[in-house]
Amino acid sequence: MKNINTANKTPEITIYFWLFNLLLTMVGGSALDFLNTYVGLGLGTSMVAVFVLLVGALYLQFKTRQYNHWVYWSVVLLIGAFAMAVVDTLTTNYAVPLNETCQVAGISLLVLLGAWFSIERTLSIHSITTCRREVFYWATVLLVFATGTAFDEWLLEHFGVSYISSVVFFAVLIMVIAICHYVVAWCLSATGRYHPAQHVMAFWLAYILIRPLAQALSDYLSQDADNGGLGIDDGITSPLAIIVVVALLAYLQKTKKDVIKKPA
Image (cartoon, rainbow, N blue to C red):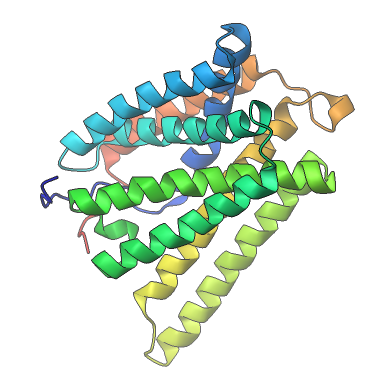
């Protein structure tokens, strides 16, 4: 693989970044359920179908030489759905315990991050400017989503927590990370010792947790009241999420508010 230099191919970390991850998790989960249940493909075949679409989206992503809103977020949508399909297939079809899936995915994620840093000397999303870094990035995103999905499902299964409790739990964890990040950054900046690595660490911790937060929120909205949810049909929430995503993508493509101006 040629390690061709490009403009940065990821978006700036803004409120839109986190909002898209929340909304696309809802859309991806609904799409997977549609293929599995309504089309009748089953989990295994649905996983293969999503994988084929993901390969196509990744092909387009690697061919671009700069951040493309539509292609990038299509990859995020499909890679999230694929991670969910893998976890569900292992659990349902092969009876692999969720705690084992979570542990293997989490350890693999740490190993991959270690390999990425040892080779590139950076884990910053602002430095995805070569093919090799982009391979590391998308492999990391896949493991982040798989770890988050398995952790959320394990938490619900093992501890029997309600969907809303799960939403609050992950939201509080993300808030704690954000507060700690800004407090530490302010303290270090005041003494002239702030280092970008502190920002990168906070980002990846929050990114790991945004996936189970989004999944728990999606479950809370869609599950029946008897199961602790609001019982809002996916036929309402998913189209609404798609409309919001498309509108925001059109807005961002025009305004470039989430384009990184100067790659690191």
